Amino acid sequence: MVENLPFQTLQHDGLTIEGYSRAAVQSYWRIPELKLGFDLGGSPWDFMNVPTIFITHAHLDHMAALPVYVARRRMMKMEPPTIYLPEENVEWADRLLKVWQRLDRGRMVCQLVGVKPGQEIELSRDHVVTTFETRHTVPSVGYLVWQRRKKLKLQYQSMSGNEIRDLRKSGVDVTHEVRTPLVCYTGDTAPPGLDNYPALYEAKILITEMTFFRPDHRKEKIYKFGHTHLDDIIERADRFKNELIIIMHFSTRYATNQIERAVMKRLPAQLRDRVKLWF
Image (cartoon, rainbow, N blue to C red; front, side, top):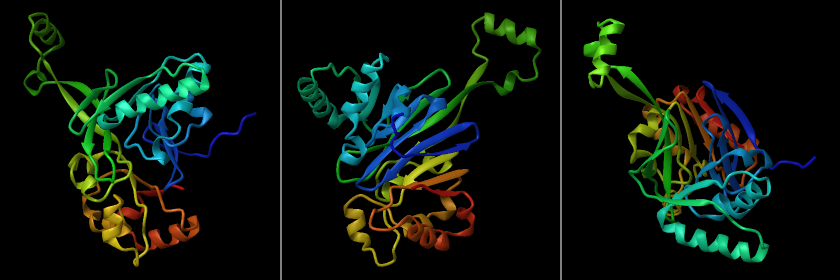
């Protein structure tokens, strides 16, 4: 039996969140029900069946496993994956895969799709993904998965089924699209990456970073390197409407029990019950 890379699992409102994240080590996530993953700092064997990956930025701890993931899917006779990443990285990621193809002598087949903030990606009939600007030291984007449903327009809700059917047959569009923000993944970002996209605070599940937490950490240095501090989360406590907030990407300078004690002690009551610290 092959050992997997480590990851935690949590279920919320019909969705399974699985992943691992530690600053400068590895970040990788998947949501099986949505058939997608976020970032490729590592590539657990269990994650191979995910056909679509959204990469936030090209730092090694978020993208180093790209050739491993692509090669393993081919080895396991799976369809080539689709990988979304900042548009500035597409050419270099393609070169990287070609170099590994030459070294490995195995084809690296995938679809690399460049994205920029403000785009919309069709995931399935029921889900779309939007991209938004984050603030990091290299080109980066965040991703928000929306559920979409067709609902009867208000003016037709008092009509009978036959009347609605006749309207449809005559070419009248009797429905409108309703979207619900489901899962948001920010990757690494300084606080403006949170504030740039208000829908982030409305997502049912928010996965966001908090690399530093100690009071003596220098904010100007944290922001310069594109990260978030515990104080930034506390200052925005009233904005978070999320049902579940997964906080990840903690610095490796500190033990997990040290982080948990310090963070949970300072988190406001309105956040504490909704926050999951991810180690």
